[in-house]
Amino acid sequence: MASAKPTASAKKREASASAGDATAAIVEGRVRAVIDAVLPSVDGGRFPAKRIAGESVAVEAHCFTDGHDSVRVVLRWKLLGSANADFEVDMRPQSNDVWTAEFTPPQPGRYECVVFAWVDHFESWRREFERREEKNDIRVALAAGAALIDEAAARAAGSDAAILAEWSGQLRDGLQDAAAEITALRALALDPARAGVVARYADRSLAASATLDLIVDRKRAAFSSWYELFPRSAAAQSGQHGKFSDVEARLPYLAEMGFDVLYFPPIHPIGRVNRKGTNNA
Image (cartoon, rainbow, N blue to C red; front, top):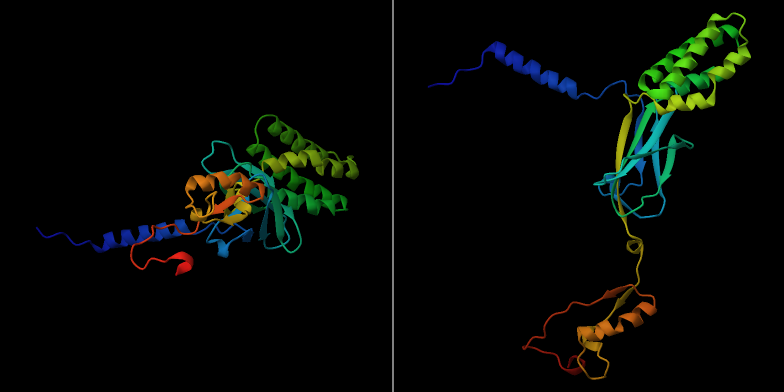
């Protein structure tokens, strides 16, 4: 029985579905932060960098955005395969859009480090608010700040949500009070303790991210002293054929000299054809 050919309308529906899938795959255009590079990087990221357990790891990210808004960057890291929760630390801004942070991997294994960067609207508002002097400008800015605090309160929970709701309410009350002192309103809006609560509930829905893989080894992997030894020459008595037991007896002596790796040259049986004699004769 011949199979039916798809109709024009069916082809149109398939094309529309394909176009829809392609549209869904487009990255959100409102992600304004850019992560240009994350270091340390080996061969452009083809291979994971290596570090030593118990030693500090310095991570550097090149992050920026358009305009003059504030950017916030954090580093999240975890040991793959571990049941422990992820750890996160804020990255510090340096010159030329460079951000740095450090963490100490506690044990050997493979670690995943993820850098997140986003435009921090609340911190941008605080920075702009600090330079305002006119009373009317301050009142307009207070309304915008209260709205941003309300958004953070909606993302918060428990006592933090109550603190932020109370804060935004105080700012709005100050707007309604014509006799309120501008100096007091400014101090209330720039309260650093409550700004820290807002920072814990930042909106990361439009954050850019970049991943860095890291292999952490034990300390001995960072360096070693090699000693090359020929087992056949390790006998205690001259003229005797050395054995592995003779090599084992020499291990304390080698360790005392500071060597931690024993290297054997290729070991293979002695053939019966074209054999070498004494001194390769």
